[in-house]
Image 1 (cartoon, rainbow, N blue to C red):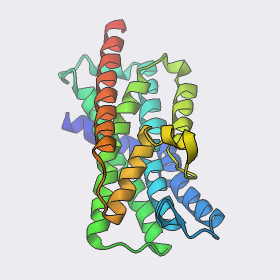
Image 2 (cartoon, one colour; image 1 turned 135 degrees about the horizontal axis):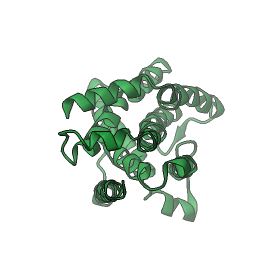
Image 3 (cartoon, one colour; image 1 turned 180 degrees about the vertical axis):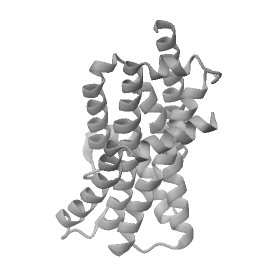
Length: 240
C-alpha cells in the first residue's frame, strides 16, 4: 500500500490540473484579494493579508481534494484502473487509504507556497504560530480528502465533473473564502465544512481557543465523509 501511496503522490504532483487549481490559483487569488481589499485593515479580527493567507491556503487544500482527487477517481473508474487494482493483493481499504493519504500529502505545497507568499507580503507570526497553523490546516485537509473520495464515487464518471464543480463552488462561497459572510445567512454558513476549516485556521493563527461546537462539527463531518466514501466505494465494487 505504501508503494501505491507514493505512486499516487507522484501522479498528483505531475498533474497540470493540480498545479493550476491547488498552487497557481491560490497564489493568484491571494494577490488579487489583498489588492481588492487594499483600503481595509482587518477582516474578522485579523489583518486582510492574514485573513486571505488562511483562506487561500484552505482553497489549495480543498482544490487538491475536489478538482484533483475526485476527478482522478472518475477517470480511473472509467479507464478500468480501479478495477485492475482490485485484482491485486491490495486490501479492500487500501485504495481509499491511498487516495486520502496522497491527497493530504499533495495539500502541503499549497499551504507552504501560500505561507511563503503571505510572509513576503508582510504577515508576521512566531515560529510556533506558523507551525501550529500549518499542522492545523494540513490535518483539516483529511476531511476534504474523504469528501473528494466520496464525490468521486457518487455518480457515473461521465457526469461527475459538473457535480464536482457545484460542490467546489458551494464550499468556497459558503466558506468565506473570498469575503466574510455575515447576518442570518452567515449563521448558517459558518457551520459548513470550509467555513469551519477557515475558522480553526484563524484561531490557530492568533492563538485563541475554540469552542467545543466547531470541533465537534469538524469531527462529525470527517466521520460522515469517511463513512460515505467507504459506502460508495463498496457499492462501486459490487456494481463493477
